[in-house]
Image (cartoon, rainbow, N blue to C red; front, side, top):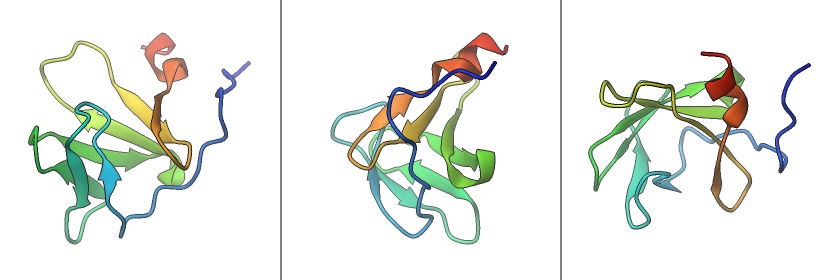
Length: 85
């Protein structure tokens, strides 16, 4: 049975800017010609997964995938992804 997300996930707009889920003051900006975002502050790269509903951090420093979904006002960590790996 899939985990239920605490708030309804909204589709991520590839043309929009979002706050960085890692840093409170960073801003995610779309990377041209990709389905990815880059943070102007922490320099992390994030890719879109699950048909546009999940944001995955690309990082070799963290042993597990870190994935968030957008609630319309903030990022929420998707714990169901952590339990699958």
